[in-house]
View (cartoon, rainbow, N blue to C red):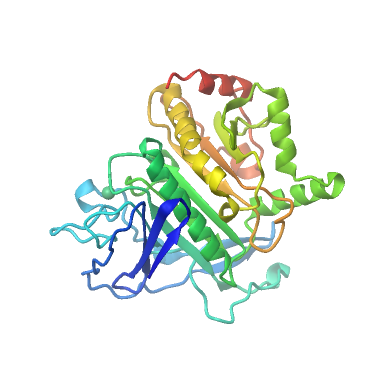
Length: 368
Ligand SMILES: [Zn+2]
C-alpha cells in the first residue's frame, strides 16, 4: 500500500515474515518491495496490566521481554538495512525512515472486546496489556544521531510521527500516543542505532493524568490553554528562552527538574502531533537540530537524553492540553550524572542543583 503524506513524504507498507507491518517513509517516490527472507513465527505473548492500589496506577507486566538483545555490535544491529550476509528488521538494502512494531512489545493489540477494567481497589481485575509499541528508525546510518540528520531527514521523521499518531489514535483501545527517544546507555538504550519509539497506551499514564487536570483547571478558570500562558510567561521573562523561529519556541522551563531540560512548543498551540500544519512542520527541523546541537555543545560530548512528545489524550482534553517536546538530560557535568535518587524516585519531588536561568544561559552560549 502506498500513500503520499504532507512534506512530499511517500509511505509504503509491507509485511514482515512474522506478520508485523513495516512502513517505509521516503522523501521521494521509491518502489519498496523487498521481501523479508527470515523464517519468523509470530512472537508469542501479551503482557498484562495490574493495578497498584496504593496510588491507583496501572503497571504493565511483560515478562516475555527479558530476552531482548542488549547493545549488539554494528555487525549484528537489527536496525541497519539488510545485506546479503545479514537479514535485519528492515528487509530492504536501504531506507530513509521506517516504522514497525517492536519485536517484544510491552503493549500490544488485544482481543476485540477488550475494555480497561474500572478501578476498584484491591478487587480490580488484571487486563491484557493493550496498546502498541513501535520502533522508528531515523536513518540507515548506524553511527549518527538525530541532531546530525539533515533538515530533510528530520522532516521525514516528523511526518512519520504525525502519520503514526493519527493511525494509532483511531484504534478503539488507545488513550494516549507517546513518541519518544532515549539516547545514551545512561538512560537505558539497548540499541545504539539512531531510533526512537512510540508507545500507545490503553490508559492515561499518571503524568498525563496530572497534566490534564492542571490544564482543565486552568481552562475553566481563565478560558485559556495552560501552555499558551506558560509560553507567554517565557516570552515576558525572556531569560530562559534558548531559541525561537516564526513557529516554535525553545526554553528551559521555569521550574526545570533536570540540569539540562529544554521544552520546544509551537507558538500556535495544537492539541496533538497530527494537527501540526505545513508552516509548523516546515519550521520544526531547523530548531530541533539547533537545540539538540546546543545540548551536545554544553560539554562538547554527546549528551544522554530522553526526548518526549507530550500531547492531549486521544479522547479528552483536546481543548486544554497542548503539544510540546520535552528533552531532559541526566548529565549535570562531564563525568557526572543526575541519578533519580530517594526524593525523586520515592517521592516524585525533584531537587535541581542548577538555576534554570543559568542552564538556559549555558545553552544559549554554545557556539554552533
Ligand atoms: Zn544499525
